[in-house]
Image 1 (tube, one colour):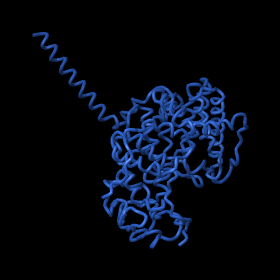
Image 2 (cartoon, one colour):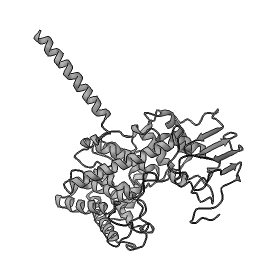
Image 3 (tube, rainbow, N blue to C red):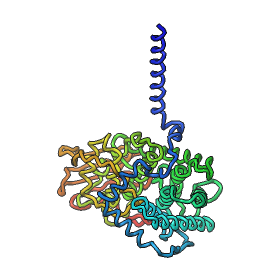
Image 4 (cartoon, rainbow, N blue to C red):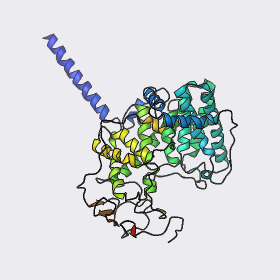
Length: 455
């Protein structure tokens, strides 16, 4: 009898433990529970000690051509004096000085892959120099540059070489970098500098408002300012959730984008999602991309915007000079979708693979090691284009766009009518606008972007 009671209580205990564990997993993205999962070691921004072997293998094999070009860029810096080109230029976007952060990340990545200490020393030197640049710009009330990719790369460089820095170097460089980045975070305590982009959750989110997330991950519990680092981490997480909620709402059931202009929607905008997914996963071991399944439906929106001859309708904030479809970043975006959503959305990933041969693969991206992170390729998923019986019209209601076509060939007629929708970003005054295309534009949205606009 006593034995039966023990078995019963043991069974109850296991059930409670299972339910507790299940609830913990379900709630891990709520109330900052995920913070307890952040790993103690480095690197942890973009990749970690467990994921790096596959990343290294990809760099040395499948993507060795791109890695060799990256290494070649780094090799040219060995032994060179690092000097600023134009440190007090009014708008740092028109200078390459901010790219020292990107170069520091490239050198750090090469060091991790081939383990030659000259690359460690170069990364360290570049990192110290770019921090000097950040401080110089801040002291003179000047922006660093419009977008933050090179600053995210600087944080990644420190994260990558963290283990191989002497304790004094780790503290001094880390302290300087942490507070230099913190100075850039939007605050009510100071006015914005000229052409200083903060970004908001309804835009591309590549301005300084995105920096707290990356700084928070790198410096969490590293003893520089633990309270502030955790505050930045939480602020960054909250902001990224606002970004993703907004974009999910815009996409709706049909798909869509956070910008009406494809130059943005197919350019820098998708980096916000993918960078967040990579860094959350590498820091915590949790896959947050599965919480945001709207992302791959963007492929439907691209498909309906794609006119013969790689043209676009020229909707919203577009130059309207050539109306060429901005395909430059699409190979990396398609590759990221495959990496994150191959398991959950195989039918959309088949479409992504159909699109990939139609776009050019670039040798360099704004996050210089991004290509090597994409270790999930789902080779078993075969390329598959849109069905032959695809509908002749599609309403992207949240975008306020109705696409119509007589077919999908070069001799077919294509039209876009704009009405309603909930999106305003880069859309301009396009309600009741229509565009007709058949072997060229028969009716088009004229004018071009430079303010106040040429019409």
